[in-house]
Length: 96
Image 1 (cartoon, rainbow, N blue to C red):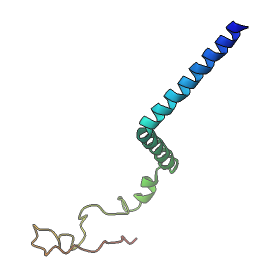
Image 2: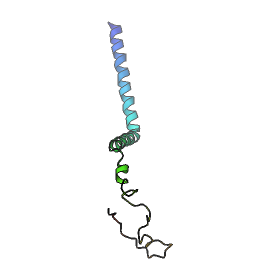
Image 3: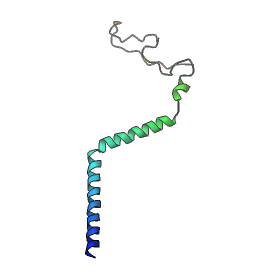
């Protein structure tokens, strides 16, 4: 009977030690764990949307939002190279 009690006590101690070590590990690495979960959620959410870039860029051969100056008139208004006064052009919404 004494051997059985010793085995149960030893098992209890091992389980308690494992719980404490796991808690310390999670506490020390909580930032990287949260960042990893956020990244997985973002990948899953964006992956489930499919290829929206193909839908958005399918008309006119480009994306809906122009990048850079993209041939927009007045894009160099605020450029130092063009001698502008630091005033930038308002955003342009493409029309179809």
